[in-house]
Image (tube, rainbow, N blue to C red):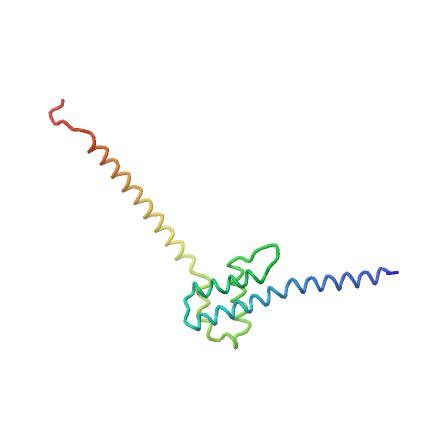
Length: 142
């Protein structure tokens, strides 16, 4: 019959195996995701296609209940590239695209909103002019 000490060891062993099996795919996915991203970029592919390939691989490999966000995947790629500098020496120059300039994005969004507002205003003015021109004016009507 099992004693309490044996049960503790068994549960500790089970916990270790479960924890190890959950963490290993994440680590390997980030490492291979970085390899995919850097290989594609060094091969002359653009940022979007390289990022989509690496991100889809990381999402697929992680598994689990929660999905990997793009920020998490970018962080995994950056961590791997920094950790393994010798292996990914030519990839450092491409890392800035993984975290785009937030201020620039905000400015672009504001400009788009401003253009949409202007388009709405132009449309309103056009409709007002059309409605006025549709009415018949009689100059001599007092």
